[in-house]
Image (cartoon, rainbow, N blue to C red; front, side, top):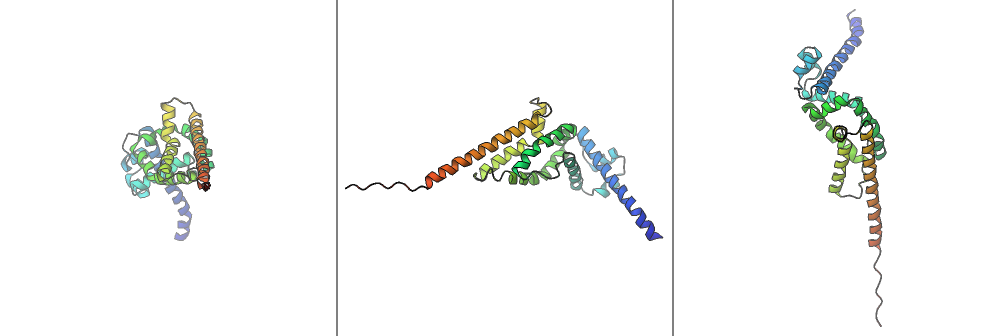
Length: 218
């Protein structure tokens, strides 16, 4: 009898735990979106979610685990489960990602302006940077380490929430225009990188040719 009861109640208990976990994450996202300057803590999230503090700690024992869960959920809403790792994926991702930023503007601004949002971006930065580096591998093959780092920095800056915010709030671009501007800039830079590669290849061929022999004087 006890075994049957446990097997019957276990799925329900698991569902309740998942619902509570999601409630905590949603409370954290709401806090970031609506009050980015407020404290981001287990205590504040417990108050906002209307649940016991110990329950928050039971699901997320550390701040890092809580931040990771919130970041994963925000990525899911932006459909950034994985970062583009090829040049074609990178270019194709700009329009849909920026469109979803437009649709989730309060959350994006909260992630950019809150201490918690900045911490989450720092925790995820290396994964994002590594994916971008792989996406640009072909276009930057001719560059030295410093040159690759510079190009990577430009592309990371272009394809970011901060760039979206600047174009929307300071340059007054309308919905859809930040995506078009970003994609145009990326394509322009990529085209120039490939032109530079062709020039270097031509120069390399010329320098590789043996010098013409001088005729001996009689």
